[in-house]
Length: 111
Image (cartoon, rainbow, N blue to C red; front, side, top):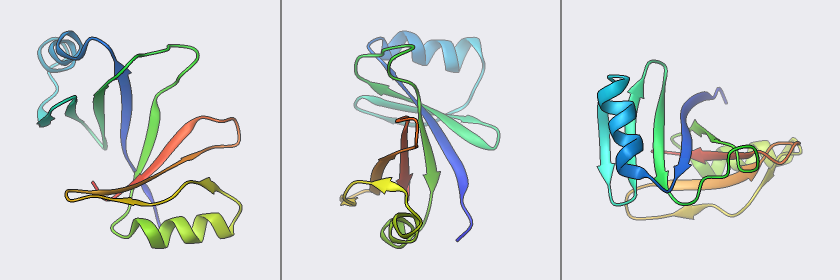
């Protein structure tokens, strides 16, 4: 199954200030705005801002890979040795969190 990077999530305690920076200063188009979440078009992938404490140098960005079928992709990757938690299927989207070998957060998402 071929994957493509969908977005990089930056955690921030300054959601409005960061939104103005990415939207107004950098000129990226806002494509999604929800409580605690802003997403901007950034070429081949998106930059998403997620409310929550940031920890530069300790808590890096989360790389998100898009898949229409998160559960099937998770199963294929786990069979190859990848580490992923349970699939969380919500009303609006489905996702699954994991970690790369260095412990960096990655995610599979149909969003």
